[in-house]
Amino acid sequence: MGDDTWCFACDPETKQQSSEWVGETSPRLKKLNFRRSRIKTMLITFFDSQGIVHIEFVPNGKTVNAEFYKGLMDCLLKHIQQVRPATFCSRDIFLLHDDVPAHKAAIVCQFLTQKNVTTLYHPLYSPHLYPPHYFLFPKLKMKLKGLHFADVAEIQEAVTDELKNVQKE
Image (tube, rainbow, N blue to C red; front, side):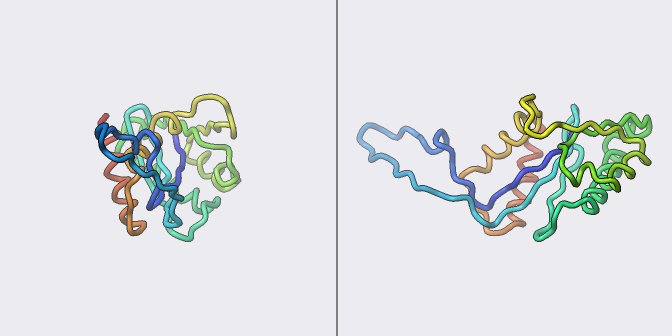
């Protein structure tokens, strides 16, 4: 299963995170209105029932188009061969991802067909539960909310470390 999400250098705390009880005589905490920062990076992650198989950060200024996604699929298959050798050898590979143009482009479909990967598409705006949106990304983002990062490299390091922790849970 694969999906993507934006990771920001500054994503404000949620109300729950910022509401802490200090004492009856303590002054009330001031809540500031924050906006998400312009420094951001896109995380694309692939995982299965055993955990995370591959993560990739989209390089700054790069668009996720068919060519980029085909290259990503090639990297994913190489990672599957390394981390799930039994699955790779049996060629019992199913890929569930969004139904966006880059994912269903002809060159991507041809590549996946040549590699014997069965593709399943998750419909856009589907009311069904989509595991990355209910399992992986909320846990990741709750840990990162309220933190400030100076650049994309710091974001990527923090996200990578946090994904390792999420996988252990």
